[in-house]
Image (tube, rainbow, N blue to C red):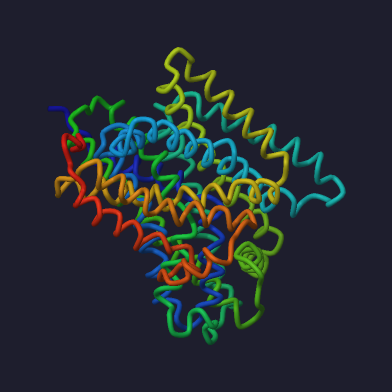
Length: 437
């Protein structure tokens, strides 16, 4: 039986780290550090539990399925799997995830060196160059490990180390201040919620397919070995993410006594400027651009592989070209428009994706039936779909008053108990031949 060596596993893990580490991941921890203050270490543990734990579990769930997320979703029903997976890939791909990452790259990597009056033209030209590079890197998935894991990721990590180490040694850092209201008595819970809001578990469902494909391309077809390798890669990526989150989060803790900021990007800009001046702005631009670039490559590749499987008569390079061009078109709508359109969809589908991940992991130890999946998905969807409507500004007082009885409803976690109730109720439904495979 063919084995995969530790070096290959390590670099696959580095590639996965780079795919996950996008602009959102860069911005959340510093702001958490500023708000948590002296309760930072408790809060960042919570953040890592969901911000790292859920994505790693998502990759493992895909490895368990041996294929793609659609295989897991079919345990509910085939029509549901087709529709939900299609929506998921469009949401994290050309309609939101890819355009948002490109826009953040432009805002933080290019605009600090440009004049505001050339914004539209600069965005257009930058996006052309950005997506040409993304398309080229995505054309050959078999070379992703070599290009990203072996080359881009080390450069990205070196840049992050320079920023954090330079800030620590520059003398601008002081000490944390008193925690904000949310982090005074509930630092762990608040950190868990912040990690949940990164919504990286959805990306894991796409990146899991990329990792499984990378393992299979090395001649590994044994399901146990695929699972073992993907799990190891997930753990390597998780350790890397946790280390970076803790480090850049600490910048928020240290800079808060000097000045309060409205978001994480301002904290990083301040830290870079205080440490290296204009060179710091360039360093931060490199970090953000590489982080967004690798995430976009991963998403284009994952979407390309999924849609190529779904429509096998269409060549992979044609599919990736369509995805890249669609992402380019959406990206030029601007960041605010992208967020206003897409966030309600992500809020609606995220809990359903998490439920399917957790149930697939549970099923590796306990026998489940389709009714368990259906009950949990229906229970979660009742709340998550309404949360999506609320993001659109559509809400009803009667439903709000009813759902407020659910724990954590106001934090976007009201779906948890209905999902559990759905599983319990499903136990009283005749199972027939509804076991999952």
